[in-house]
Length: 188
Image 1 (cartoon, rainbow, N blue to C red):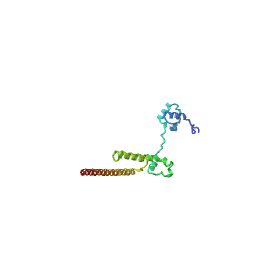
Image 2 (image 1 turned 45 degrees about the horizontal axis):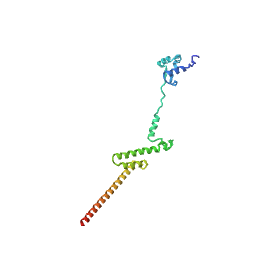
Image 3 (image 1 turned 135 degrees about the vertical axis):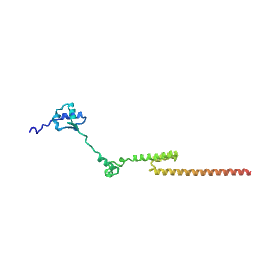
Image 4 (image 1 turned 180 degrees about the vertical axis):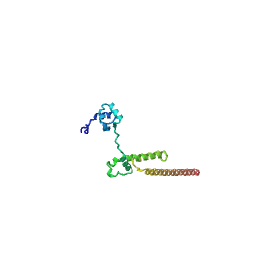
């Protein structure tokens, strides 16, 4: 009966040495249960190396931690699933701050007026006015800004037309006055 009840041999030392030799933790060491007597004889790193070579001591493979479920969920999230009110923990401003939205919009609008200025669609004075207006949150969208630019240009054109008309009237009046004076002089 003694042969049946095999005395359990402590392989603590061997496991520790094997972990040092194989450069891993002790939980990753596998000692062949059929070669216990052989392994229990090994009491040095050199002996352990020999056992590793013989295949009696192995390093267990890393446990697989699959991300397939995570990937699948993230794909669904990209489509907009699992993002209802019940799934939200942070406040609206924490999830996407108003400041970030404002900065994005501001950069877009600034880029647009810069493009307009470089393309000579607006002069530097108009650019500066629009720059300050966008900073002051006057325009919400590119469309609004574009309309404002068109409006400004139209106003400027109308102003110029009026100015020109006034100049012409002035010139005409001056000419008429000069003619009158010449006539008066001629009559004398």
